[in-house]
Amino acid sequence: MKPAPAPKPNTTVSELIRDRLKHTKHSPKELAEVAEVPEEYIERLLAGRRRPPLPSRTDIYDKITRFLELGRNDLAACASAERAASSQADSKPDAESWEMLMGLCDPETARELERRAGRGETELAGLIERVLGIAQGSVRRTLDDQIGLRIAAAQSGRTYVDLRMRVLEFLDATPGTLTTEDVSNFVRPRISKWDVDLATGVLKVVLRAHEAPERDRRRPSVRQSGSSLG
Image (tube, rainbow, N blue to C red; front, top):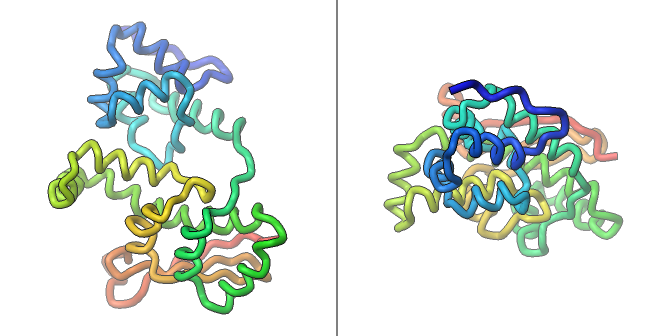
């Protein structure tokens, strides 16, 4: 089969996939099976009712690329451009999720952040997005452990695709869409505590022992990132 031509500028993920499905004579159902997601997920993506996930937060692009014989980086490039064009300021989590996240924060810092909460949500959403991103980076690795994910699905009474979809949904979560279930199932099991220097914006996150690199298991793993809080 002739390889897919490079996508034109401003091509969306849904346009690229729809065009390639037509040329390869494959169905959305077949694509869903290959990507290991529900057919509804693919249908919503193709209809433009679902924002394409970040390339760094999913494995479906690699699976779709091989199946549809696309260029190696075509989908990732289209997804990144599409998300950048539609990016907008997010809100901070709902009250209950916010309270749960603050429970992991240094108490003094948490009190100051609570005091600042009334000034505006952009600053706080950006901070929570950074904390969330660290948890998501850890959870992303579970997609590469298919056996572990299948065992976890069996133990929880879910199907493999159902649990995998739950992971993918969390990986695409933003501060404004984060749920208490997300915090309970994905954030708390990975983050022991976090703090931020309010003057410099340097974020410090202490991961739980099982999330630390193998060579550092005997001591807490600390992740730091710097960004001004303004």
